[in-house]
Amino acid sequence: MLSCGGGSGGCSKDMAVELGDEPHVLAVDDNLIDRKLVERLLKNSSCKVTTAENAVRALDYLGLGNDRLEGTVSEVNMIITDYCMPGMTGYELLKKIKESSVLKEVPVVIMSSENIPTRISQCLEEGAKMFMLKPLKQSDVKQLKWHLMKCRN
Image (cartoon, rainbow, N blue to C red; front, side, top):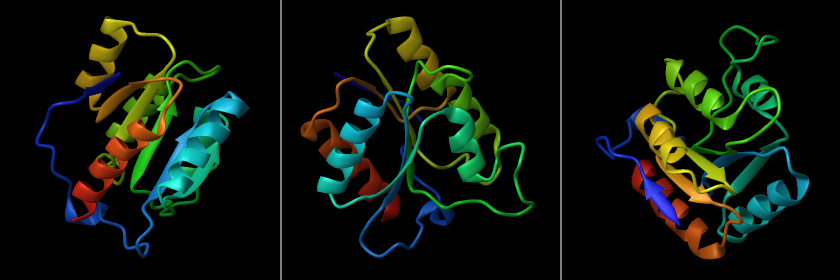
């Protein structure tokens, strides 16, 4: 099941990071099996993938963590994150990304194994591009890739 967020649907030119033909996706999930599955599906769809085992590590990678170096931001074309993680949820990660002047235009996709309509609405209202139910399938990744290509062009 896929739920998509509203909004303009467009992406800023700043977001169209030049990485050859491979869009760069940051995949965040505390579950190793789910993380590896997402990584494999994305790589099979010709994406460059960086993984993080929790939201704090993702923020560090993105240059938004407590240990951040001033002015260093990792460039990614999309962030896909699990909703339910210890320490900081995917929803909280989404909010931090959308508060960032540098990363707010990067599409964020939330994944969850739980189909809770209020959670889905909350994430989409906060700026998530899509909400996907786990486990992800190759057809889900094709939909993600379509959003990536739309943003890059």
